[in-house]
Image 1 (cartoon, rainbow, N blue to C red):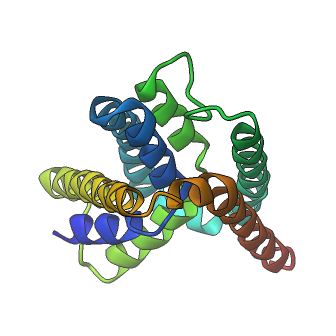
Image 2 (cartoon, rainbow, N blue to C red):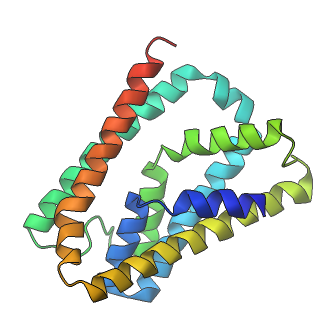
Length: 201
């Protein structure tokens, strides 16, 4: 339940993975969306497991965290440009890789390096407060809860976005042309500020 709660709430904000999932639903349908989410989930579960096993090492390695923040900043800027130009060229789903929603989900989730500090922080906090334990079945039930929470959180937000677009015809245009690029620019600025603050550490 703890894994489910953290992951569900963490997946609800309007992040780029959710908006890409919405693009799949809009242009490719539910089957492609589910495949995409399975790809996203596959990488996230690996990240959760690895950060859980090496949480103390990752938390203390400030050099690695700086590199992650720098790469995340560049990635967000690249995504902002990609969505901006894909809207100009009137493409449907930007960044669909070899026509495979599953592969797109895997790649986009793997490039989302910001999830490493997110899960490192949460896992460190939960372990320190003894809310979770690193013991066999408890570890895997926690990870399973995280996976279910991520899937249900993302699918809920995608469904709500789809309902909103069906109600407001102009929303789709603004989401693709304005919201997505601005979202990525905002995330890049946030990563830049984090990187600047870590400079003196």
